[in-house]
Length: 519
Image (cartoon, rainbow, N blue to C red; front, side):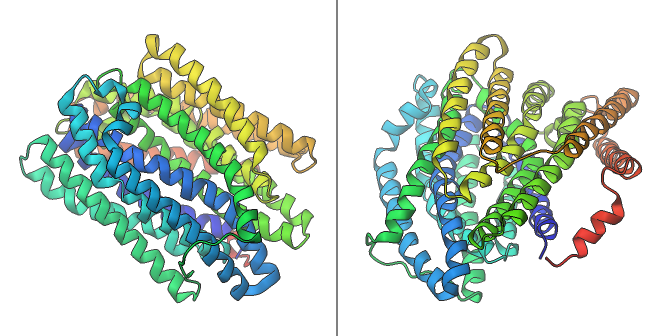
């Protein structure tokens, strides 16, 4: 299957997942609002996700996918399965130890994670309680991510991309009655935490079923150290450090946000909105591109590897630039239509939309990082991106501290975006210096045209929002707001793709031919 077809398969399912995720987030905003309880829940939920991204999506995938893809090419399915068994045994052991330690020492750990909560005993105790409920979610998600890496390396993307939909469906099923009932906010947070754990188990079950059908279920056993495991850890440790640096960015933002009421919840809701295009574009391209590059390089197909990365660059910018422009032009209407109901008020919409604009400014950079990092990882270089992540960490910390005072939630989001652009500049520069990444004059022209079309589309959307005026005012008839938002999305997308076709940036016929191509 072609890179385009794989990307659209993963991206399409991610879109469905994020739509269900928006329904979940809208229900959660309605039952928890922007409040101390929502701050406690978001902090508790962010904590296991921090470790999931570090151990599973970060270090494990970065080190494992190139090794597993290479084993498939050179040793066949049996050799690759044996390699997966030995490496996954170590992942399970590490996750088990971390989970036990966190369950025991959660109060002490959360003092460092959310120091701003310590002065409010009720809020802090609730955060610790919810953390203990949800932290085993890490084990489910880590195993799911490992199984997904195996499936993705085999070119089977459906089950792993569909699994998050299951989590959102389970959460929605729990939130609907909670939105109807009038429970105390802490009780609501408790049941949402339980639903999160059940959703994690359901996700793991789905991916395990898929990998069992593929006949590639690794056998978990007592971890043993051998040459392949040593090689894995030599690749994984720098990736853990790189991932750790990235997660320290989140950690620092959480610490700063915990010092002011409701900032953490504002950041969380804005983050969820820009994660939609990031998931569909950046994560989908990164998911497909890493095994694709690894297979080409393992087989000595350098030309095909460069073509894959060049097309990944074009596709990511072709889609992420207009997405960022649309979020900036429609930030307040988007937040108001999706979230403003129940405990979520008009002022909350303004605050979240401000943070969303700052995050959207960095959206193309977040996507580009996903496109450029496989150029290092597929060549088994995990050290260089670690240094770049460290530099971006320092920049993020300094800017967050400097901007939080005058700009509050906007400062944290803006610091994150600026640090991401610095990371992109470093990744692209060093790949180019090594001869692994080049942009031709024609490709620079493409990027300039993408920017121009994005500006035209964004200007049209901004002007239309101004013309609609009262439709997006607080308290306006919701069905009319929803229809207006849908119309804006259709008009914006239609205008952008029509201009892309007319300017020959991406003729629709060429896109259809790529979709029909099997390889």
